[in-house]
Amino acid sequence: MPGLLTAGMAEMADERSQIREALGALDERGGGGARDRISLRDYVVEAEIGAFQQERGRMQRLRFNVVVDLPPPGRLIEDDVDRILSYDVLTDAIAAELSAERVNLLETLAERIAARILQVPMAEQVILRVEKLDRVAGALGVEILRRRGDIERMARAAQGGPERIVWLAPELLGAEGPGVEELGAGLRRIVGETPACVILVGPPGAGLPEAGEAAAERRIALLAMGQMAVALGARVPGLEVIESRTELDWAMARHSPVVLAPEKIVRDAVAHPLPEGAEKGPRIAAWLAKRTGAPRILIVGGDLPDLPEATGLAAERIDPADLAHGRA
Image (cartoon, rainbow, N blue to C red; front, top):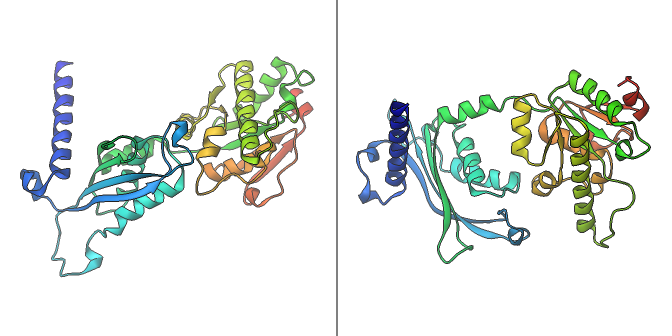
């Protein structure tokens, strides 16, 4: 054990040294500066990011410093742009990740940008610093070092997505719905067919507070779906309640069924937002299937969404009675 700890500490010290050397001034570099690299320095863009409520709905400046290690050139470059890694790879990776989805953490953003850069064959290692410039008088930031092998291992661990998105009518959890045992048995049959499935429960059709403003009422409905998810998770042992894309990806990699409280995922969707009103019915299942790559949706107690979101999906509908009586 001491040997493992010593080796791990030595590796961490080496990575810290590489980060300091790569992101430091040119005249501060040691022997590592001999490797071929390209860099992006003090690149500032505006984005909405942050875990705190006061950070939502406002833009703040982010500063990026990126250094990419390259393999030794196998032949002369001869001033040929096709033989080098373009600087556009770095700026495009930043732009793509900022537009794909709103994130809460700089750590998450840095990981995703590094992973995108390392998809380019010529990129062997990425050292990245990203800082918030508007939170304090100075700068708040993170620094990471990622190698191609790190990203490949992460990709293998995250392989696989949902096999099916299941939407349940909220009435199934009401007093007139099936009992706990019948509901649990029906869901276990569904899960037995497709273990890597994500379950959504629609919001109640009545009883929600009225806010008089569309965005607020959408959030109220999504939060109500979260409450329904917690109720279902309590009724069905082994059904985990999740609320983030990271939790969803991890559960699907393990082929574990989950019930989703969707408010966070919906609010963080930037590039492909949830269509207006979709949170009130089964359309949200089709939207989530498209975002996660799930090939099938199952609607229990609602109408199949006859909408563009459902294009290319295998959609099925069953009555609540079929779920309760073993015909799911």
